Image (cartoon, rainbow, N blue to C red; front, side, top):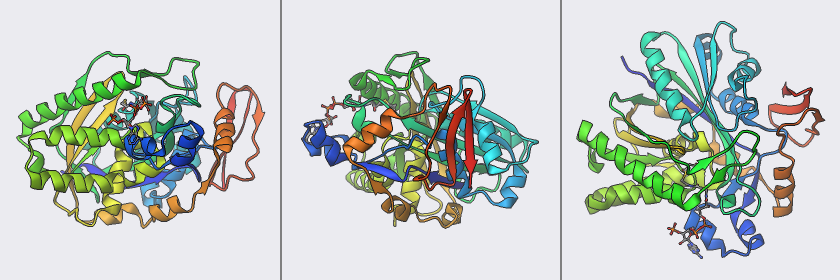
Length: 387
Ligand code: CAA
């Protein structure tokens, strides 16, 4: 039986900040952000948006009535949770109008969360092949104004339907996982912004990559030539490029140039959105299958998932014949092109108005044209609107 990704959807803010504008405001050379970090634009999240509304927007793009009847499990991976107790998946299931006879959970391990959700879903579908699992990776990446992490912010949501009839990607059996307790990036309770040891985190990312790549090589014998593309968690796109270069150290010139070429397609959307935390690796996958004219069904795609703290996993899947159908006809480049630019001052105001630990607030949502809105908070209860 095949198990894998049947459909994939993505949603982000309708607002963005140009990285060159941010660089000028921070007295940096724009090329530091554009080339050195590898980011062109950064999603700016409105106060009327959060992980639930963005996840609902991503899922709505792909969920049919037939899916609604088959989904029996919603696994919502996020490190930008809106409640310490109640899971975001319940709000989401309600906004999407899913049937009540389902399981809903929220799951956390930094940016690794969506991969944990995917692997859980794989096991669940093995036992329940007639059903579907909705997997979400949604986050709002926040480091703070004028911090070194600022150019690596962003946000958005990925939604994936996992089933036994995957149109997009069949997950392969072997995976390599590695966990070790380290403090490279974390967000203590009560903090709305992440704390990070930036340079250290980048080093740990590469160490963990070496660890799981070597283990997967030992288990499967797959070398760079066995992959049509290699994808990475992209906290900023230069990080993935460093990872790919590390893997390609002993590869042939032909394999190196082919995998570097595909990486450019795979980082195209991430470059325009910024860090999605849990969703970043899967946004890169979406970017590859939407933008690459070279990638073919039957090819093996390698995935490196990394979540600070830290947990890593390397796994792979085989691209399926109907993979384009799993995109549900959505034109993501057109959606990204239609976004509205904000000034640095506007971004700073929106950033400071982020709704966090607020007892009561009525939000003005007139300018937010999204289908799903955070309308306010009453007695610490979030009020969502669907339209
Ligand atoms: N032209 C071209 N390149 C330039 C340049 C210019 N004018 N000026 C600087 N650069 C290059 C630098 O050489 C450097 O490149 P290398 O990394 O290849 O050496 C790059 O731009 C960045 O410059 P700095 O290292 O000086 O940047 P910084 O100290 O201001 O911060 C950062 C960079 C550490 C990534 C910081 O943005 C940060 O802390 N980000 C958040 C942490 C993070 O994303 N870590 C990644 C691993 S952890 C993870 O993956 C989980 C997660 O999602 C958070």
